[in-house]
Image 1 (spheres, rainbow, N blue to C red):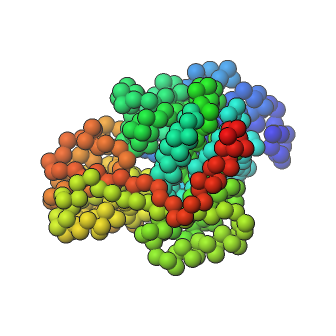
Image 2 (cartoon, rainbow, N blue to C red):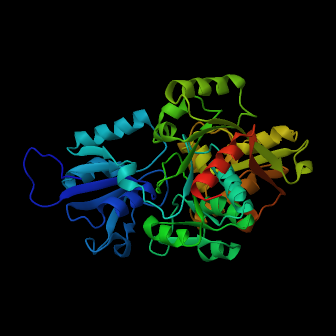
Image 3 (cartoon, one colour):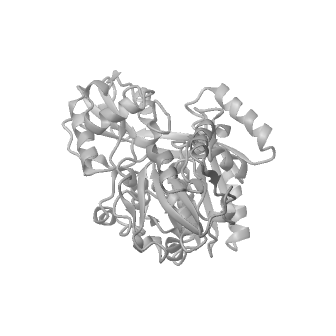
Length: 452
């Protein structure tokens, strides 16, 4: 990639800033900039995830050109950093943003004097030595994890060694988290995994599968492919894969028609997909499904489209029927994912809860902050748990709500982390196809790529 054009020629490398959220930003740095003397990355900025700003990307991961590592600043300081550090180019490197918001950020960058850019698949996708199946989406909270677990079970049931690699969530010590392998509950405890991490990793462990994650996805790839016949890329938010997929599934949300072409980089996934999956068709209005199918016909005619349900089940429905309940949901789904409700509300309705108690008047600390920041929320509790203090705030909030039970619609086992003064009902959700096209797609892939 050539240095940027300038009104006055610069001597030396192009000065770069990477806008991120502790995931895609680090991967883009590692794959494009880390060892290239044509660039100097002066800083990262951080958004979406709390407690990331103020740290440094460590020198041990940043490489020989960055002996002191790279500072991470709040995105609110973006324009000031560009001017202070004489930044030439800014690369947006995080996900689940409205297209309009992307261009607002671009305007801030360019008004401060820098160029604005995005990195695509050719620059950032790594090639694996084994076949890769990827599961991504047009928005966060669509049901990627349920489909990912379904695919892992399918390949394992056919006798293949399948290993999952999860989109990054490195919220702790970045150097220690460079490569993470989770195969047992003890692995999560040793890693001091946050609620957000446990939500993604625990279901794999419960099904006897291995899942990798971390910061350096080149190193992760070498370890993961050494013990796999097929890799399953489990995407985060609506980001596109870090590994080049041989079969790319993309989920669309039947509760959010139109979002498939309204968010970055979700629309890119929509236009790249080998197979589109319309999720939650069992709980969404039929007109929503029709609108999404019309969008598919207009933009992706000829691409296979699967219709899928998210089958929601409670482990103790007797504690829901006729009771006042408080609901806790996956945090990112409710916050920057923009959803007002999730699987917990589906369970409350299905099992006849007398009332869903609004948690907002009882929220404390980080939970109260989340309700103030995300005004669309209507009283379900986002499972904010990026730090011990946030976990304590979640515990205090749930205990303060005058309800008879907690409906836990997070995939994590919250009772492992918090103590509640009321019984907890665990809600799970599984992928269920309407029809039988998915097995045929997988069998064809198996024959062509795995020799069966």
